[in-house]
Length: 82
Image (cartoon, rainbow, N blue to C red; front, side, top):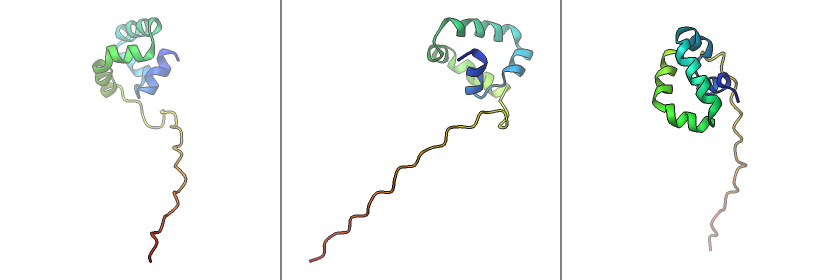
């Protein structure tokens, strides 16, 4: 996963972020390349939320989520009446 894919997964518009705050985008890109995505998220959690609010990815640009698989219906057990 590269940094732009990561931003999309966090619903952040990478292009708008890069255009408006190129220094911060480049700094984060360098850090992201040096560590695991989960570590990056843990380190920048509160900052990611504020960036998401500024550069929210539009719903049409977000990749469709995986369809949830519903469990098979469970059989109904009727009590015995004596």
